[in-house]
Length: 443
Image (tube, rainbow, N blue to C red):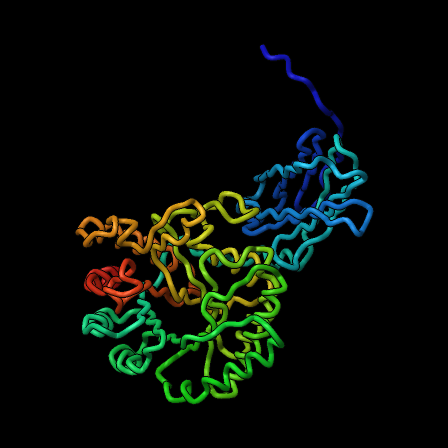
């Protein structure tokens, strides 16, 4: 029998009537200092996208605070989630934990814990009418896949007759083109319901006034835009570099103004076009202003989603502060974080197009692994084998099924077709487009 030590015992009042969240903060003295948060869903609804931001700071306002962001897993009624926050430099003298607790962005409260290390504090956060309205909505992600396949292709060059043959036979959800876009007129003629997205190669300096930069950007391409009415949505930048909330605020102003100026030309836009794994949850909120303008003018959101060595890698873990959740991913299915926690809470659920998707070994660089596209990941860079193709098709089918559970997703463009011997050779799918057709027809 192990002789266990009782650290603390205390009485609690009965929980107030009505639904709410119960949050407990326990500070454990020692080296390192630890702060344990436990969240109980004491409501009748599932809480799919709660968020807790812990801002730990001393009385001196000139000393930098320490921030930790926590997105618990989806909480069913009566369930709990916990996290341990560690502070390697120890407890802050007379420090306070300011806890921003929300069921979704903008729907929450602020709690303060200035108790010394060795204390436990418990709060009851009641659900107000705005929170109840949000929580009582049906979930965005459906239990079962609906409608047909959302698979499409990203094309850097219409260099093979197999590409248009695929369009005619498969009638794909989306075709994304870069630079070489005149042939999208043929896509629309052969498959009128296919959504076409395009962009030009551009310099992307995040400097100066963002409104003026957007106006100059649109003006520089206006003639080309107007000569290609076959494009449904125009992208601006590709994978903008976002390293802070300030970067995101600049880019949001740029995209909002680009949307307005394109609307003046009678054209629609796809905004964002963020790289895989970008942005971090703490950086997304400033972009809501751009989403609101895009919604007003019939625009869509665009993102890139890759993983490696499998497209499933990272689903359920890996986003800073995000607990295990099989609905979300650090790389693929990351978009659900933005829609569940941010966009739905602000009535900004606009359509989404994944403008690049697939397997990209670039996500493994920090692990010291050098790898290209699906041919490297599955077949070691050799001429693809039937087994490699089957493996990739199975992964794309899984991803397709997941996106079909989200009605707001219009489609995803697998990168890449049209470059079998060039820069993107290890990603190229031109030779397996018949398998793509078969996959689409199977849905």
